Image 1 (tube, rainbow, N blue to C red):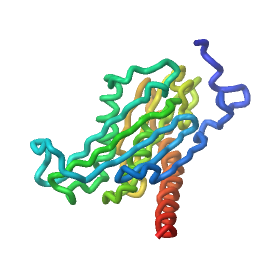
Image 2: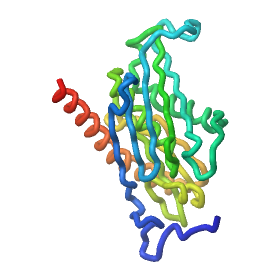
Image 3: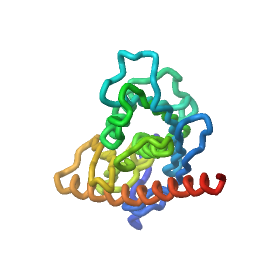
Image 4: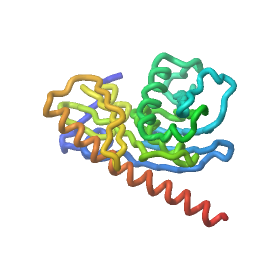
Length: 241
């Protein structure tokens, strides 16, 4: 695939966005009737569905902890979510991202309130166009909140990239593929807590500071949308009652 022009002559990105501009974001909460909680999150063309079951007891009692719940997370890409058909078997990347997403959520979930139980999070990537791990964090966090599981805050994710030596917010697949760096970040904004920070590629010290600032600004925008989606879901339930 030939490398596209990632930064145009007018300073805009290949899709017309400014460097500090998010993709269009859509968030729906409570989309599945059979799950304890669920959420559908779209970052541009990236679409993530998350479902939560629990807290509940499980047959494998030796896995349970006496003082808190365990969180189990499965990140899975559907076979039609990428350009080439993906094998339905879990890949090493999916296993790794399942762990990364779980660890980004554990600091905010009040697991101590549900000892000897399990909370299961199932994440399905319906369409992948960059930023699947950060969108998955947002979707999983909202599904947990929709399930009524006590949390210290909502966690939202966004990735900052470096393309043509320009830092850009919320990179898509093309920018991820041809850019020089990719930095996924997950934040619990009201706690001032970063729960996920990874860096693929190289940034200078100054670029890292600027990229983190850009990520926090983007996360705050997504956080407002997430809270609004939860509020709308709650109001819908109240009206139906």
